[in-house]
Length: 324
Image 1 (cartoon, rainbow, N blue to C red):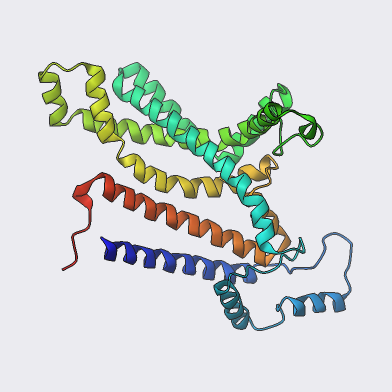
Image 2 (image 1 turned 60 degrees about the vertical axis):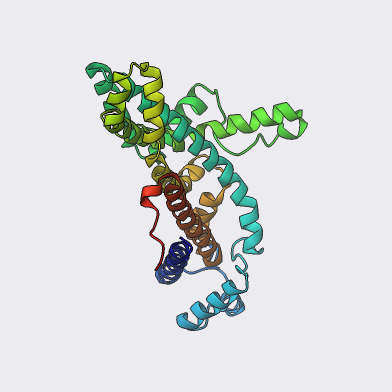
């Protein structure tokens, strides 16, 4: 087991290195140059040349890559071109907001998705099941940016039930009592979390329905019915077995949340890592782009490694054999 974990960890590190390397060369090959303002505001070429020399952009690309790896090995993420502050400070400000949004969306994804999947499998009537299956397929096919815009227009602009952007109310938040501050944060969180979580919940529901229906057809369920157990108890036993594939879904959900957060955070002006990365790409802020890529790739490979470990713990049949 230890050797298997070490092999998986080594593969995870190699994956992170490959992603970071690919993004490094891709962002440098993309059109555009840092330090050049947009519009009709020209900048002195001498100033641009000085900035490029300061950040090492005047050196050969291979040398820049080696210098980046050396700095990364020493824990130095560099300095942001556009924000003129350490990249670590920008990440420290953005990551908590992304974690809050991703956590709320993940909870909505699994709680609503599993509940809906169990309902479909337990009450698999032709008309009801067909309606819910079509509805979940429709929702699952919706682009998150489109759903986010619809929620913003309907609940934010037309009905004015919820705020349309930001984490808190910039005017009233400081004067609110603790409970009022919590409610204000929840109101601002509702729409972006719905935009991310509902689409994922539709996919989880379809997956959970299929897993539970397969489990309900196994021999131990027929034996339980033959012994006279109630349908509620049988469903509980079957659900515990059918929830095992949800561990795999958990490992796959994080990449979806990270990619979706880039669009959703931009739509709702949510100051998280996704919006930070999107703004950095437009500004050609290489250190921010590389840092957000690094954090995202580490999070994805770590979640998949954790899912594999949980799977091995939950199901002894798939544990790796002991090394000879």
